Length: 309
Image (cartoon, rainbow, N blue to C red; front, side, top):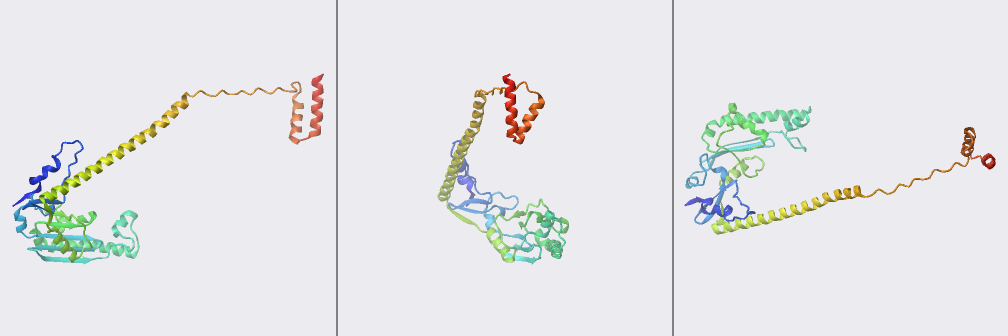
């Protein structure tokens, strides 16, 4: 008998503790777990068909009928599987990637403006031809795709519009059969299409219920320890940063209240010859500027004699 993991012990992960720092450890969103004969198994959630929420025995009684489309770097590969056989397949390649620089030509045109080289023109033509080839293939497979319960597409986000051209045989964006592939894929080739199909249909044993529970609790405890360590580091950094913020304000306050040092006022020098006229002063400054020591000495002696009288 099959039943969902949550029915067996799902509450033990989130409701077992009432501590404030308790961290609920959720199961993987890309997988669905179930228990059979006291063992825990997992499979990809994307295999659940529209209307299905949990794993049931009917899933293992039916083949993995689906369509897989892979598109990347000018390489395209697709296959339709029915009754565990690839009943239709197609692969082709066109030169659309800029050599030694990467990226398709249209992406470079959008970023830097259209290039005028012959290679750029060829890559633009091949991009349009690649889209037309895919659309023609979708039209050719219309009847097969209509009977396919699951459709998996792997491509760049800007290329998804190719598969949604409804007038050209594409799929509606709200089609409940559409799925993304929940793991990394390699270069789009027919061998890769088959590998993806085999991996999608795989079921993994996670051990007994006790082993699975112990492993989950261990991961939960490890996560809790890391979270506590992170909070401690953040609090320590906050206190240090707060201390640095306070120091300048105290210094500013102390500087503001510190008494100003007394300003020394230099006494004005006494004029040795207050009674001389402006012309004589100009002559005196001119002699000093010209470094005329003899004339300066004679003038100073004369001024001193006048002051004595």
